[in-house]
Length: 177
Image (cartoon, rainbow, N blue to C red; front, side, top):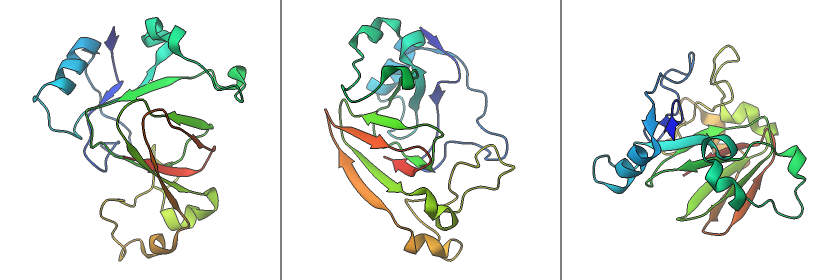
């Protein structure tokens, strides 16, 4: 399959090249090209990440392998996406407008989770920005002079590994690396 706008090149704390306008246009890539990049030494870790690949339509051969946990109503979760990369990627602190189940297949991830009530302490981009559901705080190097309330934000840190599934409720702020 060929993907367009699904492979995101970003550094440790950036998903959006310009938080006002959104992602830059990314050329289409074949899945084999992405895998070759990930498995070779052509790119450093943390610099390329395949994101938001809808399994049902983009990788239909994998769909029969998707299993919902018995406690999940399939009709409520029609979108099942695959995210993968070579390691050391960071998804900045943000919230999603839907409940999420993060299933880890290989490797380990750290997740920071903040409740929605912490919105003033996570410093989202202004409402007029495309990235208004992202925090301006760089979790790898927080600027507490600029974002002092972040130091007091209520948050939990969890590590997940192969076979783990983690529930992220709608509108809860989370970062993954």
